[in-house]
Length: 220
Image 1 (tube, one colour):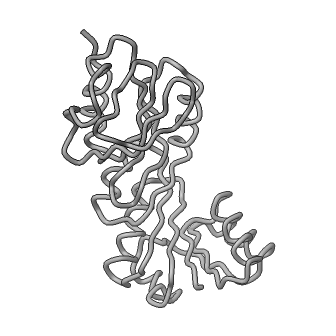
Image 2: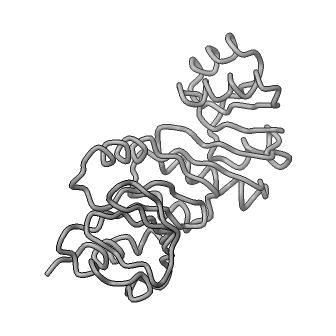
């Protein structure tokens, strides 16, 4: 597999190292000359100095035959541009962008980036799983714009005592399962009666997250 990596910082360097050791063909584009020299000294001539956002630079490294392009610089806007150039100019079948600001994830997906990786979101998700009071925990974000979330039904929630088939959820939300208070998972069934303290696992569009949270956690 031929993989182009935009950005030769710590993330790009270690990605390149692991991929080379796995016998992939790798080319790193790094704008900083000193950093380019460091990569070449360690990994060999698999690095080109240049701006990975520029189509001319991507053309020089043969992005048109790449199976995958990874944009992992420290700037979200540069990662977005590099992936768009790869997708729309060179028809790279799969692009992956590193995101530092989680709020940018939705716009990246809308603009056609196949997959996004956010260390910030991953860390926040781990923290949220340790907070029992937090009602919604993102479990997985998919390239299609959907995410898998886990929502705890609070005691006294309006939906407590309702059957699964009676719920009024956003149209794009699909219940995948219910975990009862003892930790036992149950398959979704319209006749299943919900109770406070249970967790519901739902696939939903990112933009419907707040509406879903309100539908399952409102009390009164």
